[in-house]
Figure 1 (cartoon, helix red, strand yellow):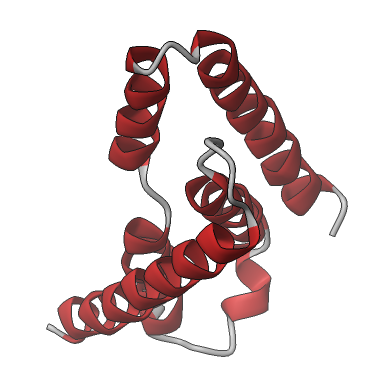
Figure 2 (tube, one colour):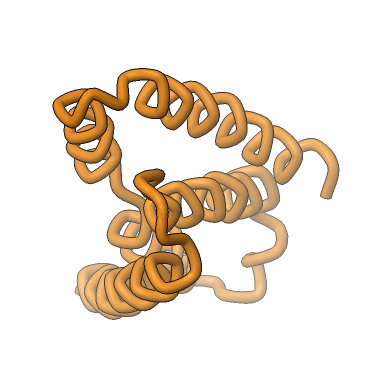
Length: 122
């Protein structure tokens, strides 16, 4: 039951963080590129790489509650595949196929690169 509470607390924190970063990004970036989701998903790729690639960093917590709260709760609500897909389709529908392709390509390549860096260089 403690895992369920940990996921819920982490999920709340991740959702609020995602919302605030999205608002900040929309104030900074005025273009059509979905900078908020892009920033959140890349940050999440790196952070989940740290969590998955370095479990010893969380070994001080014997029940794994922090790892569950961060990995499943926070990261699950912080990053978003569905918004990524919706924004890509919206760009295409608005006639911005090249920008949509750039969004997909850069999100995947940079996300994989950041996850790799987190796992293998830290």
